[in-house]
Length: 252
Image 1: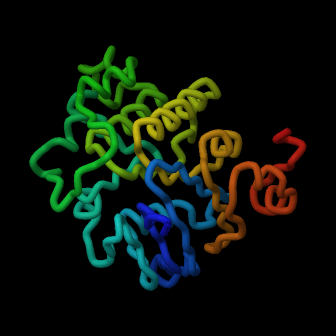
Image 2: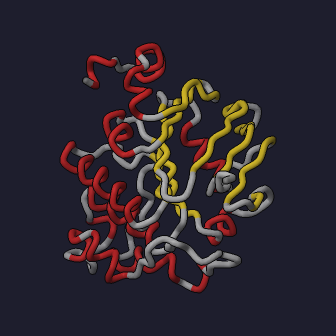
């Protein structure tokens, strides 16, 4: 039996910022219901990869396909309408809007679903998101700017869920969070997968990535230097040391 096509397929993409050659032939796949993590040091191209998929920094060469459809030439909002949600680095919530107003933004007429296919993932609405994140429910009328860093991260994830995406792009979701909140992010990602969402996760927190990912890629200077399962990466002393500043002993 033929293997079903991946939900997201990135093939040999080359992405630039002006004359700066950032992604140099990157290829990867994300399948339905799968969590895939991208690891690497700062400045290696992780965020550029997320931006390339989302259409914010389109590749100059190569192709990105979502559910078999080529995304080249589509604007970021048109890509979002096809079922891709972004949890950006730094949260990027609207500080002058309430929690409730932030969450309702993806349901506005301006965020129409376009040619979106029906999602197999759980259908999210405001009561469902507030039930998933009780701390947001308790502060639904508070301004986003008055939330703690952890609450803002939950709000950014909840806002993404409100669009009922098939794929969630998450850029450094544990950045700046306490160990307790990192554990909460880990549980949230597990729940997303349980609800049928796929995720492409950029992360520097190695234990978090190893705990939640089904498959991993390591990027260095715009090229992939490893791909495999969390167990395989945890055994690869050379990659851990050269590209992640870790060791097998630390992960034991």
